[in-house]
Length: 354
Image (cartoon, rainbow, N blue to C red; front, side, top):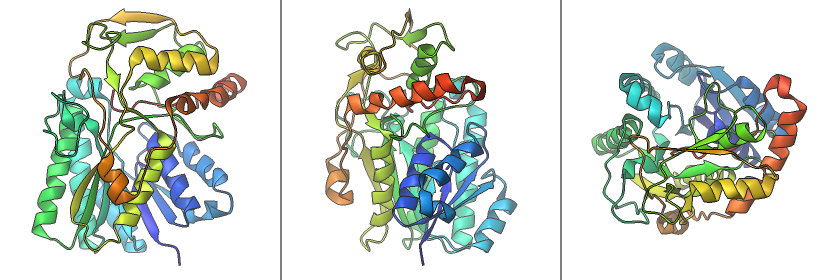
């Protein structure tokens, strides 16, 4: 019988790609999502892409803070592990609405852990973030680098990591893997799933793609006076399929008796500036992106990129898809968008932790 994995926030950008890889890897996947910034349509597309494995996917519209609904779900099915993506993720919004972020992200996680413990499910992969490194004094960031988030969103990730560590210390029968990943980009090769946030995007690449198809007049570049090669911020852009594979590797690692509460970076180990990313998109899509230069945003770091040796060594995971492959998937996405504008299907990518 296939092992059943609960995926919170599984209708989102990274979640859908991870769910697809789970299904193709022989797992059953149960997705819970409150659909605040995603659509059930994306889950249906994953089912289609999974072919014969699509029948192993089920969806429940649940907010993690609804403990009663979560209890009913855990009572109805036994889960081998939980992959926890669910959470608000916009840096700017978190600065404006910090209590919303602390409530949604932290309270939701606490409720999830309580329900998992009550039902004997003690295997967790948590979607953390490179934002916990704040504005690092040295790069690349290693798992042992100092952590100090610059904004409420980053602090929710940092606090949840600490909660997980404390929870593990109180009960060492738990196995918890914290994945600090950097900036996801790209989309599934089919162009059928990708980044299509509801409302205003929070990340670089959905904005770029919306400018390319005429939904926005120009891309605003925040910060042009950083001490980088072109003055714009530098990030580590990792293909979302590589990132999804990293989650599968983490789930598989949970079967290792030596696992306690572990942390791994998932990135490429290379830094790319905002302007370099835009240029790569222009080359891949043939679309010119008009730019508007603006001041830095509060809470944005200058340069952040990963050291990934630990994940490569212990998870047996490697990043395979290079930057141009990340943006080449936009060709399919742009064509699909232009053909079905009435549905506003933008199969784009994101750099989640800009």
